[in-house]
Image (cartoon, rainbow, N blue to C red; front, side):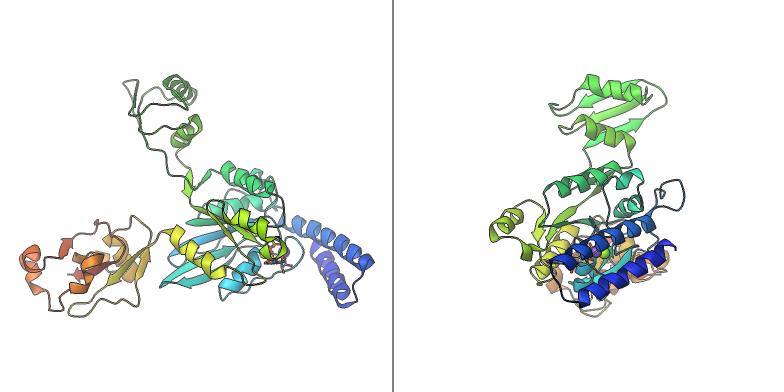
Length: 387
Ligand SMILES: Nc1nc2c(ncn2[C@@H]2O[C@H](COP(=O)(O)OP(=O)(O)OP(=O)(O)O)[C@@H](O)[C@H]2O)c(=O)[nH]1
Ligand SMILES: [K+]
Ligand SMILES: [Mg+2]
């Protein structure tokens, strides 16, 4: 019998037992079956090749304005959450490894469409290529925000274990990229400067590391009090700095005191999917942590469209706005007018023909005539003019 058949058989037995009356003995037997089921399901997650699942994530298309990935141990309630806050149903069950692949859902909030990715549970050692865990942590790398989902009834240790797995694949949670300028050169030796006092590392250590990486010609300028590890991150260059929210689920099963303690930790939200506690607040926090920029578009002679903003990541440009409207727009782009948030109310409705005469500032004090590389700010109103 193959693994899939064995799983089906046990699932049927579990269902059968759930229908019969419960007592201590059946409860125990049910526990054994679930453990067995989890083992078989874990086998299904084993990579089929010897390479350890490879370094690539699941093949799910990015869609919407941002991607949020659910990372956690098995059975913490990831699929229950997806099923609750999106229109997508992901299978949920009391045994581990219910979810075997990436399941995308969409959170609609403030005019934004946020992709929420339900993923298989991971186990300790996931980053080392055990099971499909490696694929899960690689998928986390593609997210704009990671939700580390935890079972509030389980030990605090779980949080640290997950952080270790993500760290191992180069994900840095809730950290900014270190403020270090590093330039490789072909000659000239090493130039080292530091604009701040270094208390956690020193020039000698850094030079030793550079030698270790066979980097004999480069410029290094350190502009914040970094650690040695942070310097290595800069050298390696492929680190991903991703914001993270710790989501403690199943607070219905812990005391108020315990809940209160968890809720006061940084970057943390406590919820109960089962009892619908705090789910709206969680969505608000997801929205805040994604730090999206909303831009309103305005057609000539019309009011800005406040109903349907374009949501983008911080640091987006007019080029991104064009692509957000239509793929061909950037190619025919002439210029854009931008009104910043506070003055949007005073935007004139008159046709803006005079702008072609290059007197924009004189005639419309609030608008700025800009090109494709212009950075947009939250609440900006944008009109695109094409050839
Ligand atoms: N008490 C309690 N149980 C919950 C809550 N949310 C989910 N569960 C239960 O936890 C179990 C696991 O839920 P799933 O959503 O399948 O968990 P998962 O994290 O997707 O699990 P895998 O896909 O196996 O990794 C189910 O029996 C749920 O009913 C909650 O808020 N409180
Ligand atoms: K489960
Ligand atoms: Mg699941």
